[in-house]
Each structure stands twice: as C-alpha cells, then as structure tokens.
Amino acid sequence: MFGFMFGTACLVGLAFTLSHGRHRGHFRRRGFRHGLRFLFRRLDTTPGQEKVIRSAVDDVLGQGRELRRELERTRSEVASQLRGEVLEPDALASALIRNDEALADLRRSIAANLTEIHEVLDSRQREILADTLERGPRRWRGDAYRTAP
Image 1 (cartoon, rainbow, N blue to C red):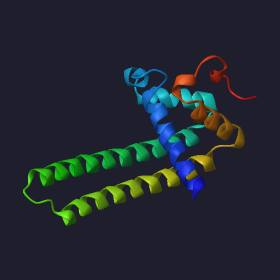
Image 2 (spheres, rainbow, N blue to C red):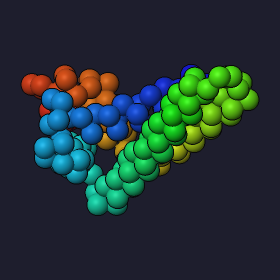
Image 3 (cartoon, rainbow, N blue to C red):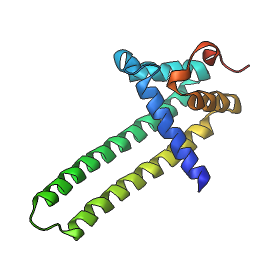
Image 4 (tube, helix red, strand yellow):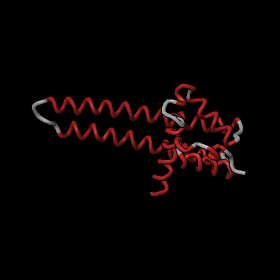
C-alpha cells in the first residue's frame, strides 16, 4: 500500500514539476513540451522512450483535468444544496462518491503510467528521474543539472 501511495505521489510530482518548472510560469512561457525536452535531455532518452513518457504524462494530466471538472461540479451541487431549505444527504453523498471514483481513476492512471515509464527506462535513467523528482522544481540549481555518470 505504501509503495502504491509513493508511486502516486511520484507521478503527480513529476507532472507538477514538468508543468510548473523552476519558477512559477517558467514552463508556461516556454510551453509544456519544453519541460519534457529538458527532462529528455537530462535522461538521454530514445525517441521510443520519449513517446511512452509523453503519453503517460498526457494521460495523467487528462485524468487530473477530469478530476478537476468533477470537483467543480461537486462544488456547484453542494452550493445548491446549501441554498435549499433542506439539505439532502443522499444527493450530497452521491456527489462525494463521484469525487472518490474520479480520484480512484486518477490513482489507477498514475500507477499504470508510472509502471510504463519505469519499464522503458534503464537503471541510470530511473535514478536521474528519481533524483529530479525528489529535488523538485525549486532545487534545480548548480549540480542538479548534471547527469549521473
């Protein structure tokens, strides 16, 4: 269970790192693909590996967008419930259950895509990716840019 949670956190962190960059908005100015190019240069990936990683990150970000839409819909439903004369527990519970299902879909997507990324990378690349993810976007300074020997 801990491994699954750690893996989920790692892929979410990777998606966040790639979408937010070193400074807030850094990759937005240059584009999301620039962040992936940085990662690919750092990992020294092959075109086949790049395709798998791009697909995995796009899938997770798509699932994240779905979750965000579901959360917005739930927020609207809860607000309308609060406006009413009577709070209906069943309607509230069904909205929260949909959130749980969307989050479970995101977790499954993260686990499956992390597995795919792990399979296509060699041990050196996995080590670099883990170090990059562990450091986070704010700590990519100095020798953080160097790749492992």
